[in-house]
Length: 86
Image (cartoon, rainbow, N blue to C red):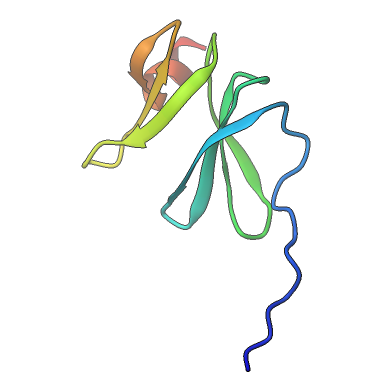
């Protein structure tokens, strides 16, 4: 029989984590309270991928790998466009 270790949190301190997606070896999610899109790896290293002026309601990827973010304030935008505006 295979042993399973106890679950451990990958990330703490989220205001309101939502819309989790697994992509390219990392967990991606929107933190609605912080108005950020984050990516976290299995070692718990996190990266703020984009900051959004309103709730980042949903995330997904185009076939070419670009991240899309849907929010009330911006509609649909790529993460590159959001970071360029910051």
